Length: 470
Image (cartoon, rainbow, N blue to C red; front, side, top):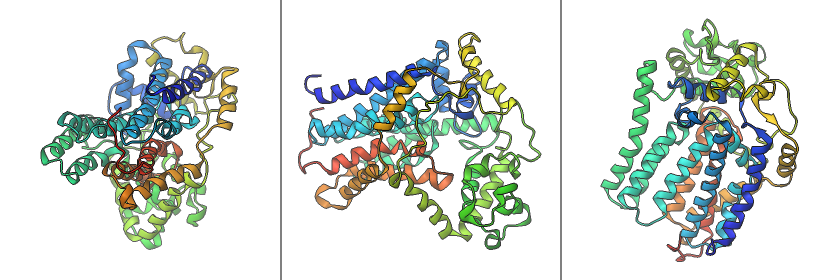
């Protein structure tokens, strides 16, 4: 504490808005139907067809405590842990304490980060596993065998939580090979990363009959192509004509690509092709995610991208710029209580049942059932978070400058390091991949922030000032 008093002080201050968030948004922030899917999966343990169920297994471990406030509390601890890992790595590469604390500041204080920690969602756990993997790998040089195995294992587990980290399972062994650290370490890291992924794929195949992480990747990619697809150019076969933009219901059939809705509206519209003739069970929004529909959507998406590659690149590139030119005001704490779940009756029954089944008691959650998404805003703490996020946030332009600083560290020979290159390339992959597959939301970009901050800080270090003091 004495050696690192600047960071310790910042860490203590950063705990305060997290405490306010826990007091103001009870029992946690339940986000749309995704939260209820994860809770349902924690009670009825089975791989989900839309999102991997690694986070549901995390919730299953905590289920005996019957507390969503405990889930939020542990996730806030993980958030502070991520900031600590940023600080430790930056100090390892020679920055002074104040500089390393500044690099960790976005994770410590950004309200979007704190909100994601308050969510009952998979994003925070995947971020913690990913940053943990890089910290274990890079905190000592050269990394030992146990370090590369631990890093590979954590990366592989993160894939079962959020599949966008899948390329990192291959990237870490490649990094070890380029650093000439030997085939044994690279192979051990790769094997450690593949084992959790292969185990999950086997579990999914046993439950659903297809060797995959989900039955949604093709459908997500199909929705992405709706941003530009022109079937006069694509010329799909007759069995894929129903997937064309002009065959979708209502306003989704907009002929002008620039005026079409976001891809998510094509994916989740229950009048679109994938939902027709699909019986809906008690668990909503899963009926369309069959292997047949997923394969069909993937065929169309591949044809669309092959026929219009530049349109696809243009659509993705336009969204890559969004988090850097505008501040993400959509990922903010609500300050007004809405007394409705905002769901149709069948989905509302599912949402309430999921929460009650996880908590194991109707009394512990009954007071929240009348509130939006099951989250109750408590005064004055919710108002305090509203005031906090109006004053403190990460501007998009500052985020862009951080990423460009890390890129400069790759380009300038005297600033270049293999660790910064690994982190920056990983950050770039994590920005591009979700946008290339589906849609933009700042929630998908947020895991990039700690990696970009570390890469930028390493680029700003004085060459030759690396240290092992942490």
